[in-house]
Length: 155
Image (cartoon, rainbow, N blue to C red; front, side, top):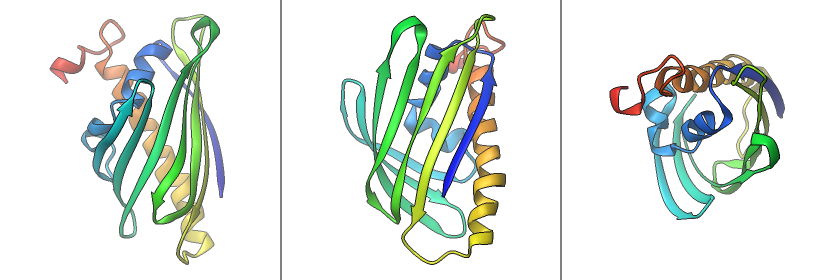
């Protein structure tokens, strides 16, 4: 299944990327995330093990790579290393806005490795995905100094 969403975040791309790459903090603000552990880090590339509770516990490992482009554009891409999914790849593409915020494009291609009724998958990709993206936005806007938040040390 494929999902593409766009959202506007009232922090610059660097601040939003800092939230996206703070993997170990995911369980603090993503309600279905039970755990996240960085297995390796080499510059702008990570291998991270996640534990997600949806219908049941889902454990998987992703390889994530950050790239920085011209004029403040940034991208975080991931591919499946191992776990319950047959496929899990996607990206965040961040572009600065004229007001100092970020236009974020989220893309996900996912296929589960077990039978799940299509209606449940559709529900997860609408309700749960929307809640997850809203949680990232809220986290960034409430923890970025000078952008409505008090900074990570206070949050």
